[in-house]
Image (cartoon, rainbow, N blue to C red; front, top):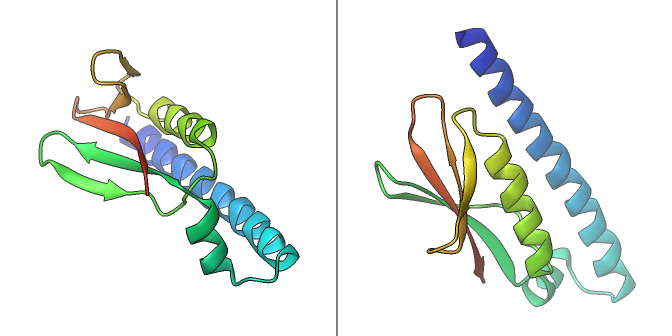
Length: 114
């Protein structure tokens, strides 16, 4: 059972790393087109980010990847929620996605403007 959990965590991390690499390459290409640094482009054109809040500790983790549109950020929040082993869903009252790990700990996944 533990090896499956480790495998799923590795899979989640590998998917996130590949996704970050694709976004980073796309940012570099876009920044080159308008002749600005990648960091300046990111600040100007990436107004959304994901925030993960672990309910037990109230620890707030800011995602490392900004998103250009709200829709892209929402898609990423959904994908992130789907990786949780204990289930996932959408909280209609609070307006955010959530996931539970194998031990039942709840993590809320919010999309916020930068």
